[in-house]
Image 1 (tube, rainbow, N blue to C red):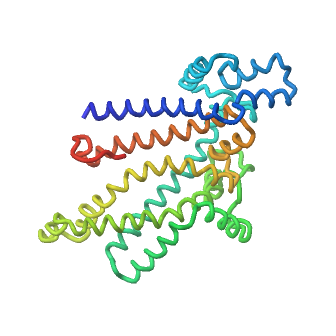
Image 2 (cartoon, helix red, strand yellow):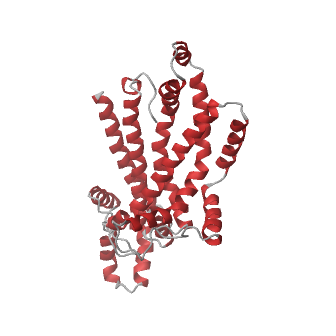
Image 3 (tube, rainbow, N blue to C red):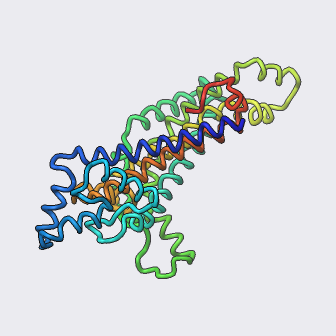
Length: 334
């Protein structure tokens, strides 16, 4: 058991090390390289030529005239100390900008994923219970239609009708700027109202896939021998449904839940742009458009590390639910 956790923990550090190295290399593969464009950008801002290298070193925590291996070491040491450089566009530390934006992105991703799984699991369980009925046929068809709609299409439609035409919810922002007390009930309500459309955009298009997955798992479990034995023992339908069917049907979906949290962070680049929602995705896109390399590297690194941590948590907690994982009797969680 101890070796199991040690191996998974070591794998996380190796993966994060690889992600940091990949981030360093990818940025330098861009046409012209980051230093060339940064140098031109700083010169256009009126920075004297003799101060350009010093400015670049301050912004990216690496010396542009140093060998590549030295730049790599400087970058890795700074990143390990959570010093991601200074944003060119905002003239603030990247870590501070990321810390301010991350809670809004996490709020949208976590809320939408929880809602999607909760509704999808209940709907799929009912579909399996009434397999072959009109309800099952209609909801299965609607689920397939919902899965075929990209989230950004749903986002644009919600923005057009719910916000612009009907005026029910705000079109952009994270909260009402006129509320100064951020610990009041009014502020919490405004956060929910401003985040409702991004959350709905992610939730609506994901329910169908989870419902069909739960339906398939439930039907498969209902045909298992241990369910038949439970019925022969005279156990109630409610106990069989909750303790035998639901638990085993949800188990394969648990890993997908945590993995989806990480993967959805990447989708926020488009979602937050549509709603002008100032989270990690919006800052990443702005950084790409403005050639803000420190900001680009910082947000990309944070999003990727979040995905790795999501996989790590899924792997560790999955073993608590299914002891066969830690004993090596079953496949890994990912």
